[in-house]
Length: 306
Ligand SMILES: [Zn+2]
Image (cartoon, rainbow, N blue to C red; front, side):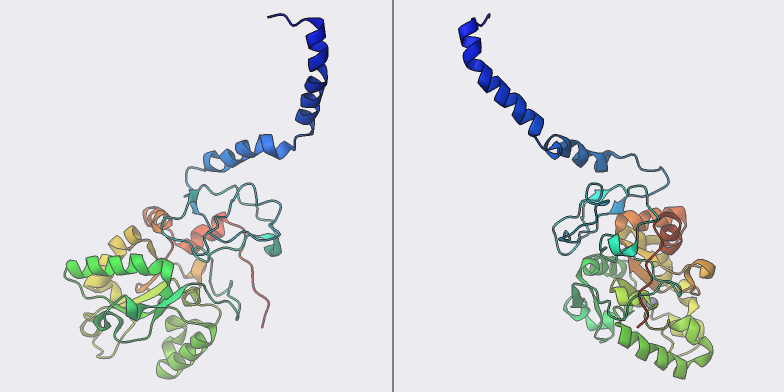
């Protein structure tokens, strides 16, 4: 319909005002929905698995480069059902001070890349509330809550299959690791470097690692009080874990002949919770978490020396 000149004149101020409003609109209003869709649809490299969202609370001064691509979720504690987003192309030049705080699920810990003396994971719970004494052997073991549910399910399935797994060790603080190291140095000085890491260089400080035991081990090794031995891989529990642990989100941290990458000898009893997605990827690719992370993510930050 045609607008008569007097009506057009009356509408003119309104039209100008609308045009001005459109010009002044902050760009973020129109681009935000587009940015929000970029992260989930960004094409991941075929050989790389999705990265589990950190779940870390938003920082009051978030790093400018990360806010639009890795949106932190508000939950204080990540869960096994955390949002999965493809990892952005890693920027290996981001300084440590500008990186998003991560939840430790994929943190690299080796004899080169250690943890701070002050690092203590969130959400530690005593396993005694979730597992019976015949599994924990009565040890006061703690683990991060995020890994407890998957661990309990895995052990229930192992028991249903006729196995008798032990949980010998879980979270160890920096100071507890120092004590453990001394204990092993006294008990087995020739094997101390195989059995125990120096404080600050153990994945157990992350609170997501479990050392498993088997009632078959003493007979296989020929030593009554043995708890950890490479021959764990020969036990029924060791076989089962090697084949199935990834389905519950656990991965073998120190596989056979990975010492050059991890700094640790083969530990067939030492499993770390990384989530089902990552654990399955690592299992199928036949690669350790450490090797994968060092090849694809920014170099780990080395804490200040205490
Ligand atoms: Zn261990």
